[in-house]
Length: 133
Ligand code: C2G
Image (cartoon, rainbow, N blue to C red; front, top):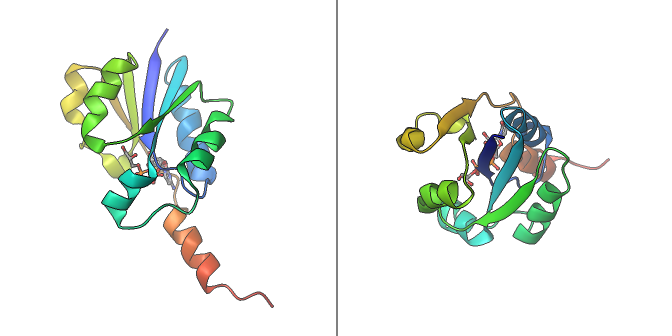
């Protein structure tokens, strides 16, 4: 039985998120997802996510491809999380390509292609600039 781990913010949940979680799950038998905390996002991006961490965790937990969810408090703890959750495979989107190669001695590291033409940032922009007629 192969345990897969992946990480993300999953703010304003969209089909690109579904696609990566579905494909991550298909690389093994059990999918563990680290959802980044509100504070981690603030420290990384200088703004809080639109959806709270409670809601983001709730959404991710409700998905049929996801078996277990936890809150990722720090980017520096990846190695600890991989060990703690006994992960055999780390899956990340290819926007992170090469960034986690140092974990190749602990587990298999796979980067999956992002779904083109959709992102949380883009959705926020479209909503901000759209006019209801
Ligand atoms: N993703 C994707 N296709 C998109 C958008 C996102 O495949 N069009 C993937 C990303 O590559 C990532 C996952 O969905 O693997 C979650 O994306 P984000 O919420 O943007 O996550 P991010 O803020 O990059 O994660 O430890 C990592 C951190 O938690 C940050």
